[in-house]
Length: 147
Image (cartoon, rainbow, N blue to C red; front, side, top):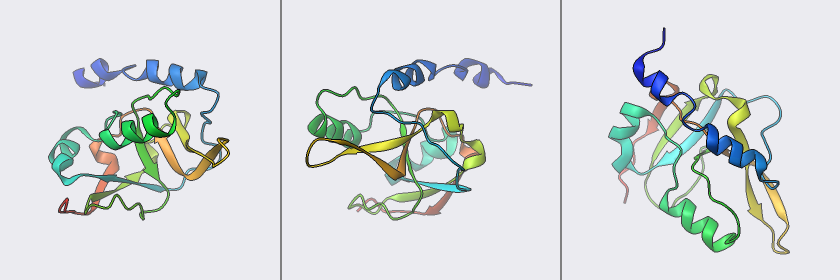
C-alpha cells in the first residue's frame, strides 16, 4: 500500500523525463546496470539526504558547468552518478554507494561532454539520473569534512 508521500511524489519528475527524451544529445543507458553506483555530495546536505534521499536538482557546479560549456543546452534537474568512486570535487565530500535495484533504468542517461571540436561525446562511466533516489538505496561510505 502506498503512503501519502509516495502518492504526492508520483509523477513528480515525469516532465523532466519528457524534456530529456526530446533532447537529441541525451542518450539513455543501455546494458546491464552494475550492482552499485556512486554519488558525491557536500557534507552540509548529509542530514537531508538521510531523510529524503537524493533529489534531482540544479546544483551550483552543475549549472555553472553547463552554462559555461553549453550555453545553448537546456539544464534539467538530475542526480549525478558514476560507476567508480573516484570523482574529485577538490573538497572532502561525503561519498555514497547507491544500490541500483532502486534505480529505474528508463530514467538513467549517459552524462555528456563536449570534445575540443565541439562534438558531443558520451561519458560511459558517468550518468544523469532523472528521478529521486530513496534513503534506503544509499549507504554513506565516507564522511567528508567539506574542507
